[in-house]
Amino acid sequence: MVEIISSILEAEKKADGIIEIANEKAKKIRAEGDVQSEKIVSASIGVFKISRSKKLREAEKRAEAEYEKVLARENDRTAEFAAAAQNRIEDAATLIIKKVME
Image (cartoon, rainbow, N blue to C red):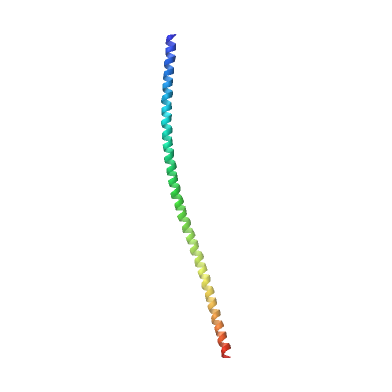
């Protein structure tokens, strides 16, 4: 009977030791997981910043190209208006000269 009780007590001590070891391992694993998690978050933030910066540069290039198109189109229209105005000025000047000469 004493042997059985001794065996049970010894088994409980081993179980307590196993539980203690498991708890220590769990703490280490959790600490390592926290460190890895922070590294992943930091890396993700870095990748996000680079990606965001790249997207902004691309958007600026597209906006600049669109601006250049609009500017060129409006410059062409302005040149057409200026040419039409010049023709009208010449016509008006000719008409005034005719009226003055009459």
